[in-house]
Length: 555
Image 1 (cartoon, rainbow, N blue to C red):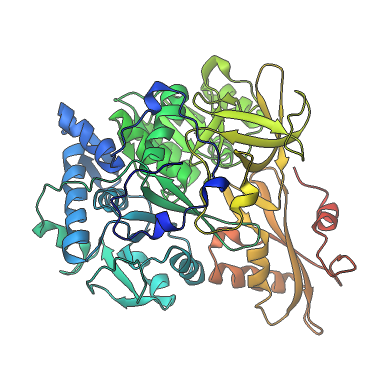
Image 2 (image 1 turned 180 degrees about the horizontal axis):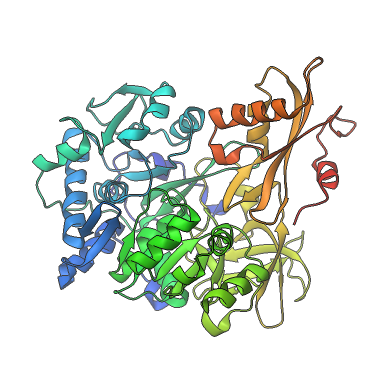
């Protein structure tokens, strides 16, 4: 595939794209997917609305106030100036973004792309070891971090100072620059931007220059880095959002997924900006609090996981949700019972969907009268999906098989051999087992690999095993996902203790706390069972299927 001349001076991303023969087949079958060769997605998403006379419209809302489109254009331009003029960013450098969902995180993301940088957005929950791995894989040299969340970055031992300048055209990491935002003092980004011009000419990036790297857990525990082009970010808005979600300029979006998740990035930033609408960015929200915000603010488009929909109903908040026009569910399978309970309580139909970090966003979904409760939906316009057997051949409708997808977006791992397993014969294999019916609806069956999906989070069991093995009383362990009515699955650890250690509730609590202190807390094992020995093959390999048998199977 021929790529356009890159605007990146630091060519790390393009140099580390998969070999052309390992790429999926990309299809641009809709007229709106015919993008120009030169494209800066931040300018296209943001400045287009302001330039068309919508600058005074609300854009980014929070519990602290509202930013208009003109405000966001100005601040993102000033962030781009600080990056290029003071911090020495050169196009193609990766910039780690760290913080909860709020207007400053969104403005930083837009500013990085305007300056020609590559955004590497991370969850605020991540710990030092996880951040260190991300910086190593993506060769990150600069971080813009919410002032309340710099501690784990510093603990990673990467920092070289808070405001050292000097970009490197080769993307090398001599030490991580950390620039905080939202705090006090002259070196804080919020103060630094005030001295910068309001206008910035966005770098003339190619449509196929890498705009962002999204990290996702692998079943080996080592995170995978999925690279996405500028055009990809428009493609998800011009397929799922335009054809299924169908947002309007007077919509107000909100949701729970972090902007570090591609589900959250699309649903809470890309889609509203593409439609000229507004988005309410919430740093934290309990289910009850989320429902109250939806009612108080007049939210019409919601992105969250099935867990949250069940929890809001369980909190007695159905009356606060009846103003929703477009509730979207993704991140885990939406059971028919949850869909029906929500509809019965609110008269609102949840739009289910499946996407992946590698595909960037949702590629199977249905809305309105096309919804069949329990089914994920039909293929989103612009995409193609098939159910294939182990040899890559189509199976008859009604037969379970591996879900394979192709379209305008697809998997491009950064220098990762797992590209060969995710992409085969032009198809993206998501790791899900599905059945397609005669009407073209896709019905979820199970994950095809060992990934645990809990509350909308992808969790790799081997990563948790590695942490648990660092505890002095743990001799062996195996981690799997087990069924849970509220969260879809929960993490369960089977642990063999060293001689003399007590396998009691005190030890369970100790191991759970041990994990929470070392990796993101949502990954901790909610259930722990002690065994005398783990089931293994004659060659010593852990037999996870036998652990699943002990747990009673997986959904």
